[in-house]
Image (tube, rainbow, N blue to C red; front, side, top):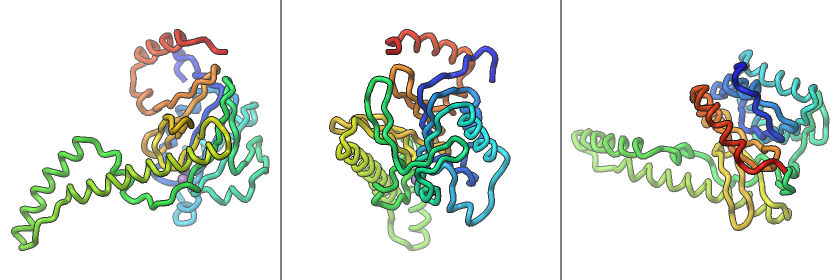
Length: 272
Ligand SMILES: [Mn+2]
């Protein structure tokens, strides 16, 4: 921890989709975040350990072990840790209601923020009606699309030379992107609907690896993202305000930029 940067203190932190046990897991960045922050309550919102992958091949470097150790240490030091398993660590669902090492396992939970808002906390796979193929395409930027268009030209020049007909790669990808976006929208709507059904103000979930915070017909839809692609955490400040932290981006800023950011935060409405 850098001496000139104060520890980040939060009322609550929500983490999901860490996927320990897979090569994609950004354990070092997560360790860095855990070292820098303090919180009273920590929710693990599913897919923390990727059980399916572990059955296939063993990938468990020291850093993955360190994440588990750090979280257990937080629990020992008095942080309330609530573990809501996901579909990749669903074997833990057999232990709902069980306490181990200061961690409570729950199928889902209700979290009340400092300003009295009630959120349903669940992983979200129950509401994933569609396969997630090509979901990543939804995140392709403009540049990637232009690249695909250029690639398409070359691709079809080759196809023509080989005597094949025209086939639009970009049109194919566009349909895939549209499907992926539609999938995300359907998921978000279904999860928000469940929150409405349970009579709470909002829902906090994970699963689709896309951090988000928006209103869906009067229900707050909040997704804490993941630690495979985007490296995001959801935090609750002491006044109840929720914020998505993009840790990879925050760490790429210089110390000066971060210090400049901190006073700006203090100017916001004081904690209740
Ligand atoms: Mn999941």
